[in-house]
Length: 180
Picture (tube, rainbow, N blue to C red):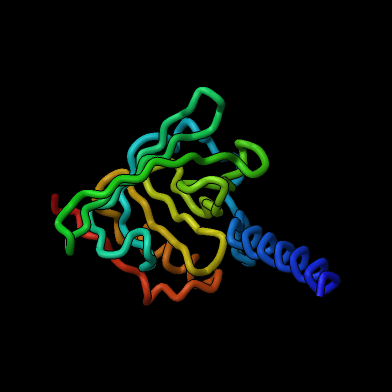
């Protein structure tokens, strides 16, 4: 019996560790490529969420914004805010983003619940840093962001086509209302 315990406990801890490691994925979807020659300073500031996939952290949320600002240690402070229209209350979450490789490549990892990190990959951005397409670690996460509450149809179509080529099912996007 003691011999079985000596095997089961380490194996169980190893499996738990692997599960935790895989839940902290900072990858990028297979056919996605992060923006090169990225200017993090120009990306800072307030962004409006235009569209996203539905997932538990933003369930029933409208009026969603993300505000990025520099931290003294070189990381980026992430402040997400949105209105839960079912509970009729504002929700806010503050996290931290760090570059995966270097600041010239728009591959970041973000955490709101350390030590868990997720991928945050800017895969398309206009020349003026007004509109961004952001991929998560997998095809479950996608965001369309804008500096204003609206996005031009040409940018919308460009982002949707790019997302489809990568493998995203863009029919499942939620188009976020900004009315408060």
